[in-house]
Length: 461
Image (tube, rainbow, N blue to C red; front, side, top):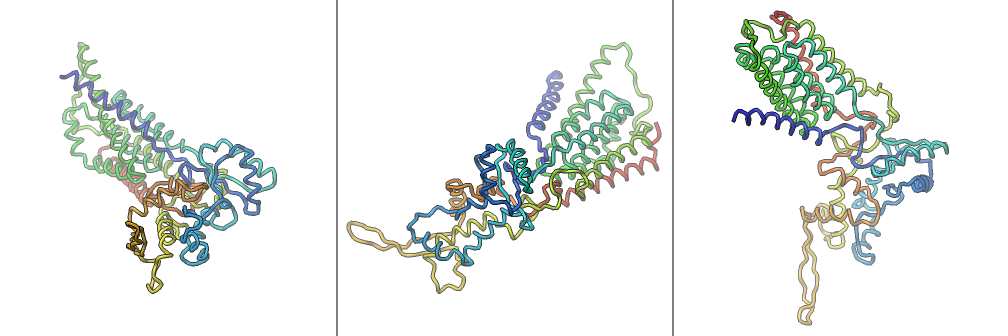
């Protein structure tokens, strides 16, 4: 039974490590999932761009020139006829609004949506366009934020030299470092720094008499850990969930380290015992004046890295003034959503049957009209009813895949149900206001710990 208890933490640790690596969430600076956006000066003929794309090996792309009405109608149907007659009416505003997806915010560039499968050909496309004197580029030139995991790992390595139980601390901080490598976001990095500090404090007093009791009453430590969890969740639910798993993996690592130390001491003739109990020593092991400034410096570096990126001081290949349609925190009214697409579909399908005596016919969610069928050789009338509901929306949603051209609706569909479109700077990562607030709170908490250690007994060994 004891052997089983010792194996379980190791299994949990390995499982969490594998899950963290396999389900990593790495920022890439992309504005569209599964697509690159090629932007070319609108002065360039679209046929020229299409020829360059084709000759470079790009066989699939979504552009303005090849857009049609995104609905499947029989050529001679009354719905198709009404659509052609009313094409310039308010009810078909969607068809014109969707064209905004093919321009930047200033209308200076035309956009081409290229599937990621053709990404390797885009350098050749851009090179060819520039050789011909045309202005062109792609939406995402930012790469993985390598500095974040490097900073976190560097802090962990430096703190090893100041930890009383170096083996315990080293093994316990492995997962926080892995976590940041797999979730390279600013708030996740700050959260990991707090977790590493907590592990450092735990490593210095856990083996002393009353160590666990003192840790349980260290409300500052608990508060810091809770705040770090909130910071991780501010990046995304997935980041927060895996941060909780990381804490669990670190606890497993502590348990494993303690067991290994127990096995080693059981084979020794002499087992050293700490004389002073945990309540009489500092969790900083007398190194508060060194450790806390180090932690604060690395936290400032993470925040400075974020600030520099937000101000576009970090050098990128993308025009930082260029705002392209892409994923945003708030929906821009200039860029229609799939809900607008559903409503337009509804109006096209029901316009021939709506009563002209209704004040706002476009707002109707139910339309009934007479139909006729032959029963036993007799023409019998019946009422056909159409309803704007989830079933209708699903049919419209599924119909996108059956369109005979590469539609912008197909691109939007690939972004997921919660997608919101706005004009974004593709040369910077979108960081939520909540994440910024949590980074500030985390840094404030670290400052509070620093002053508490300086005023209190943080320097006592």
